[in-house]
Image 1 (cartoon, rainbow, N blue to C red):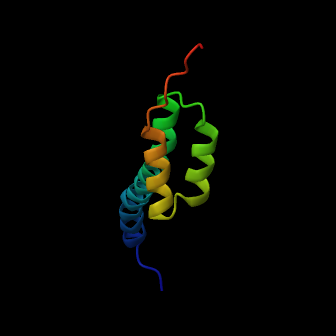
Image 2 (image 1 turned 45 degrees about the horizontal axis):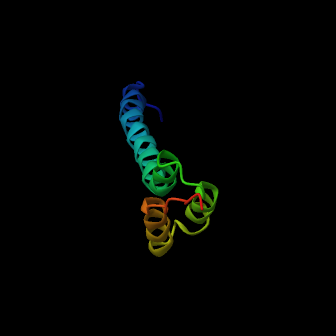
Length: 82
């Protein structure tokens, strides 16, 4: 049997903050996952696409994420005009 509807309203008011929390956690996780790609883009790396592919393909492993992050942070040698 159904109550007077008070419980369904309470369930909704609890569901909204939970859904917002889950959405923020997902967005935060995606942001953290792509930190190496963001760093490479910000540093205007010539091999940004390769870092992005590595980040997408192997970023889910800790080793792949660390390799992409280190690669994104490396300083490219200056090209001489000889």
